[in-house]
Length: 325
Image 1 (cartoon, rainbow, N blue to C red):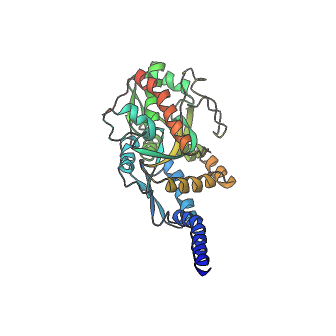
Image 2 (image 1 turned 90 degrees about the vertical axis):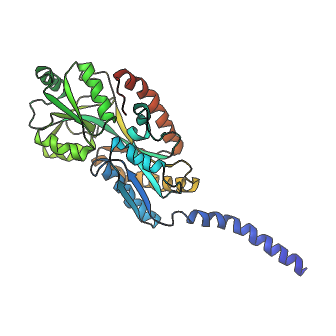
Image 3 (image 1 turned 90 degrees about the horizontal axis):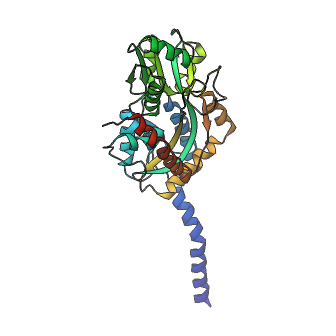
């Protein structure tokens, strides 16, 4: 009887240990600092990244730091994560450019967004815009096009990185509008905006949130928004490209990815933590002030987004003829 009792006790202990072991395993992640790499300089999307990092730090009980690795339209940062140890402690904050379209633009891209990075989640979306300094004589895209036609070769339009949405969109607009403008690459919105304010460049093609403080203070104006319809969050009467006579649309999406082989547990913990944050009313309100619409997805939702992006932009990039080294 004693032997049976001992056996039963051991068996019961084993059964009870099963769920405990699962919980303990989950509690093992994270055990130390998590780094979110962003392939752009401070400013712009960097603000959104730091909001997420601060929430993760509070909820997960470990430091979550943001590391800026700008260059090559975000692909330097993406490459760093693609080759990082796949343990869940180095992840990427990405946009359409380095999470998808770089595959179409760079024949020698050192990573494949679909095989070398593991989707964690899509975070949200924002509008792309054409902007100008308030000192410029045009107030909308139609007037800008007229100005560019009257000054061929004398107008400069900037974008925050070669091969990004701002670059490709402006190449398309240039061709469709029949204007001769210089398209100038910068290393990010943070380096571009001072030159826009100073009048060294006449317009920019970029994401909307970076310019909002300057629009609000009256030093920058939106000329057009590139989305399929007017963004209700955007201040003022800003027409879409289609309203301006250009049959084109584009918007930016933000996402988190890790190295291929990143553990399921780490993906789930990050997805759960950030999804909870993005669904909070106060977060939604804070992001709306940045002109960002929260829209968290599961990993498959991001994978599907990347596939659709490549299918949509493949023909456009080929048509415009943008190829990068």
